[in-house]
Length: 92
Image (cartoon, rainbow, N blue to C red; front, side, top):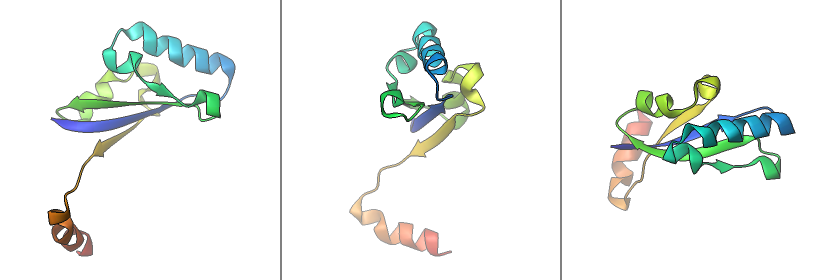
């Protein structure tokens, strides 16, 4: 499985924050009910991490009303042994 970071923005007002939080909590999805929120620091986004097969599966977990604006990023870890290979790939 692949690991994805999901970032879901919403409008910067109290009503939008409450609506987004309620939407996530009402889904019952473990991922969404455990999202991290930046609203208290004026960063009106939610973040959560998923382990799924592909980006399409990751997108399908996002509530439909927020899907178009959400950002889905594949996460990777690297080992020191991979540095030369990575540098070679980026040089092309």
